[in-house]
Image (cartoon, rainbow, N blue to C red; front, top):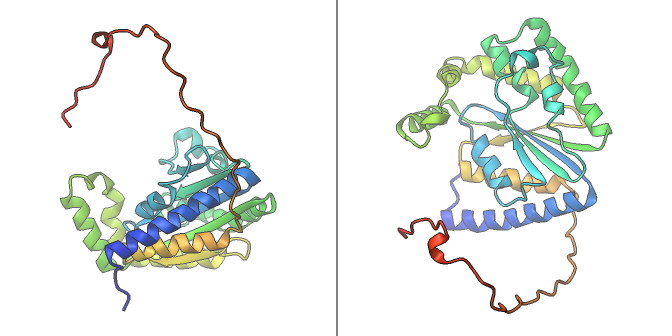
Length: 260
């Protein structure tokens, strides 16, 4: 049975992997590569914490997280993929989707937020949409983080009991366990129709968060054929001496209080 890595081991390995992520993004930036990473999965499976460990050390000018709210009335009248297309990366960028166009195959299907026609049109269109992205030079990775019903219930209870995490709990979460089997069937059908050679689904065991984070980052790095970027030598010059510049007095500066 898999066990949780000890904190010191976990933190040391995470630090090593995050340095590799920095090197990977620098290669993406300088080479003009375009990378899209999609994260889907059960509620409370650990998507957000995994994403935060990936993007935490990265340059936000070239790596961004997209977590779209529910569509507006205008967006509901658009082509379904349109608002996601607007957030795709340009050359030299990495975009991480915290949930994505696959909302339609998951929560929208299970909760009845889309019609049968809309659902099946999505299942036919998604593979073609993704093949088009890949043909255009976008590298697309899709991760599904899974969690057991017992662990999900445990994490929901922690959210409800922790004031710092209470905001994470939504009305949809109430139905997550009651509709567990419906979500399972929706996930299996989604994989059957949309796990394509150009962009397969990769499953992550999310029951132990530390293991899930390390395994996901390791796998992501293995799929990007990046090379270390050589930096030019920089000669840092010392600041020039202050030649008697007349500075305003401290009483005219709005310094914050310093309780620490």
